[in-house]
Image (cartoon, rainbow, N blue to C red):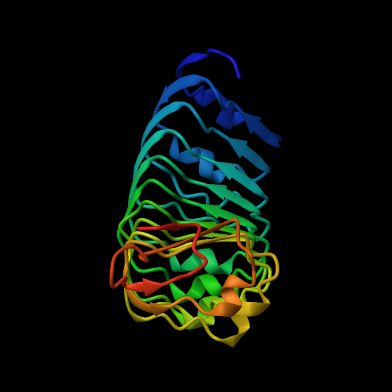
Length: 255
């Protein structure tokens, strides 16, 4: 939270006992040295809201890393790999990152937040992500992700906020969504989901749900009365027109 400019101080890499590096909210630019990913004592790394560019290095040797904030920069290239089993927070938003979501991200048992919105990711969402069972926030919105959602993702029962909107996801709408019993926000709008809307009997038990958006897909059918009974703050669908693609008498807004 200053106005520091210039390049990343490479001499930082030589600090053998460095635990926390917080240089966020500045105007520091240039590329990150690859050696930063080999800092074995690093626990907290926050570089967000700067002017960094180039590829993100891998952090396979940063075995104590718990928080990594790279959002709001100009990074490009593939998502980095991480070797820490302690990783809890990973923010990659608002960069120009491309390619696939690494299968290895499912191998982080303590990961609670994975946020990579507003990039150019263009893979499927790997089924292995279901192994990150402590995930509470999963935000992959505003990318170019495609393919069908694996039913394995129903194992993410701790997810509270799920943002998959504004991608190219396709296939049937996930009928297993009701398995995510702690779900509060679920945004699926602006994708290519198709077919009849089948939410499954468990959906009515999502007592914490406040927002559910499914507009601008290729879905038809009806929003069940049980969903209306949840009295959501935000419920949006393609329910405009006569006939409407989706019959939704309780939607807060129709498109």
